Length: 238
Length: 238
DNA sequence: GGCTAAGAGATGTCTAGTTGTATAGGGCGA
DNA sequence: TCGCCCTATACAACTAGACATCTCTTAGCC
Image (cartoon, rainbow over all chains, first blue to last red; front, side):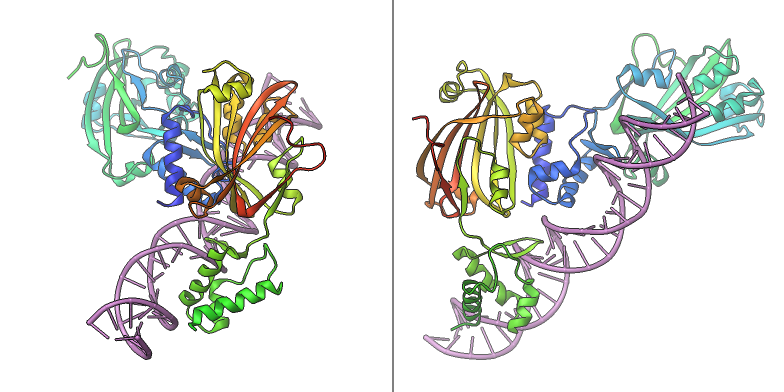
């Protein structure tokens, strides 16, 4: 067996044994290389394999970390991404790739109970947990909710905060639909998974004061998340 | 006489004449093959024989080197592997194969003056000099020395540094026992010698501030090392 | 308190060079 | 014919070093 394979095995068993806890940072590559008595490149190969297996992940400039078990994401009546992730002891993050205003299509119009072609703001991006991409999202808001919404979405990293800025302090989930899908190349690249990997697609509609305010489409990296529906919450619409 | 034999003879006499000094790197195989006007495989056969004789050793990706004379390893009151080897002008190294926590057996408990079954950390690996394995070691530490010891041992390549990290800045040797043994297959493979070759087995107990902190078992490759006891130091126990 | 600059330290990537190993085949003598 | 020596080629595995890029912390300043 090659050197890097035995190193990978050693690290794997150490992680399995709990010597390195999920979320913990491993020693720097140079130190690990010294410990195993190999060149840094050889160690990196072992780390690469473990990263592909999902056991480790590395952040340039920061270090190598033990990947956490799948995130448990609770779908209740009030779903707040940042709060949800923080409650799980993880570090939430959002990267917004684009914000645009355009005319709604039929599906969006029906979901938001607005006329077909009415203006909507569309926000697209990636949600991260512990600095790893976990989901792609596309949120659609009626443009007439507030004249400030577009600016607020551009400035705030959090949708909840943007809505609060526009006077929408609270909102609840009206319906959630879930389906499975396979990642195409674009999605796979954004989520750092392989094309053809499993995705969990959710469509959520949020309302405030009886008015539909958001239709959120989310594609979750299947292997990194477990969605949880409990109690009476969850699937109410159809 | 075959080509490879005459090449081996040539190299042997050159080494004996001091043309290639101990520790020096030989030209790459390709260059040597060109010099002798043979294929690289033919040259490699000559090198292989000299390596089996102990005159040369090769490191994949690094080169072919002239083996050094036996290391002189001084057993004083303060024994520090890295420092000791560096003082001899060699390159010290340690490869840690495993780190584990388990319950102590009777022998270990007695040596460390702890209750039988008390938790100990056990570090096993290979000590190298000039990138060649020179000894197998097994160090046992009381687990209650410091809660950080396990992590420190995992991260540091040096036991001295790991102990220093846990606040044990200095330690001295309480006793050293030495016996001779024959290498079994496992040991021979790890030390890159032949089964049945001579081993030197030492048992050292180190203490700091009157507290036993380490029991170190070491199996030295007999032909690669000369242990030196001088003055009043060394064998104090029995 | 907040902002900026600087620096140390970490990973990412690239190039180059070296040994290890596998495969295939020619030549030669017992 | 068989075994051994040697050539030839290719690729895998590993080392070595340099440099880019990013992160994180600290110090200094306003």
